[in-house]
Length: 132
Image 1 (cartoon, rainbow, N blue to C red):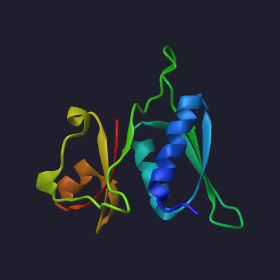
Image 2: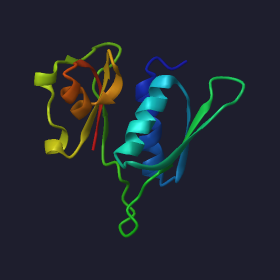
Image 3: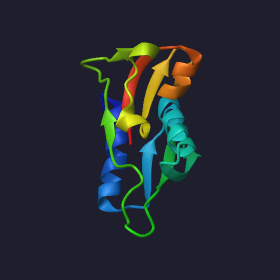
């Protein structure tokens, strides 16, 4: 049993990139599906597919690498809020990830979104992770 599914999600992606895998399979949940969609929209992954099985489903993610240097598109995946210490932020308190080049993913009352979307809608929430 995994106590922190978001940390498990990020660790599976991080480990697959360090091993040079093209595809990683992750057990699905609605929160993980939304984070995957954000990663795709921001250009950090090539593509993704949600597959249904008789249980909770699987997310298949095709990882993105630089064609010339073979470096992964995601340089860092950092879990911010965790079960033992939740981190919340108001729109005025959002920090710039990698001086604006990275993305913070938040869980808000209006759903899971990036820090820029949350700031434009003027909603705060739990800071799930930083990605750059």
